[in-house]
Length: 54
Image (tube, rainbow, N blue to C red; front, side):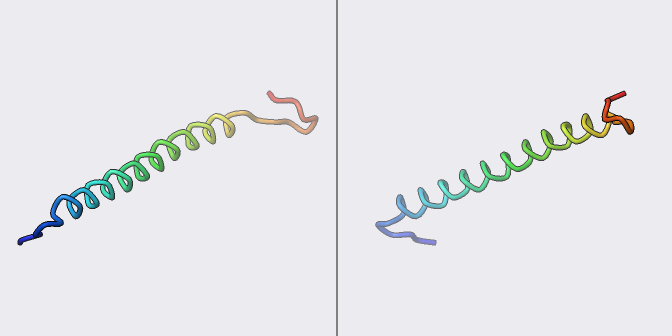
């Protein structure tokens, strides 16, 4: 496959795209883990009828 004179631009654009999409996936995974930990912590706190945590 010959990319011609624009090879640097094309490969750079692909590399940038891979980095951005990889960063978005990483951010989503890290945020999911944080929200899961927070939800587990909140579900562990039981509130009785008077509104007091027990």
